[in-house]
Image (cartoon, rainbow, N blue to C red; front, side, top):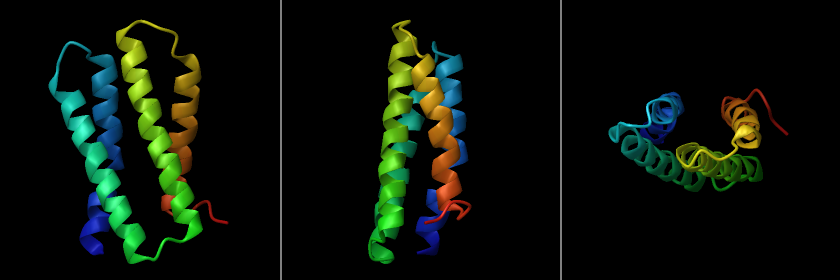
Length: 109
């Protein structure tokens, strides 16, 4: 469980890779590393869900995290195609605050 938790806490690295991918669109390595970090986050999150027997709160957090990954990918694609992105940035900011706050226990129900 401890190794899954440590792997899962790399969300800061994921956000950094995302910002690099957005603001330095010509380079190719950060989007690849970003997608690898998605897989690590999903794998470690699913592993922890198995370990703690699927409580509803963390399943909701997981769904929001998957939504966050989708929003990040939409931002990358729309930015590359020069399409409007403001609603996705708003959703990204809300989710990037909500998901870690749930994970660290600041928000609980």
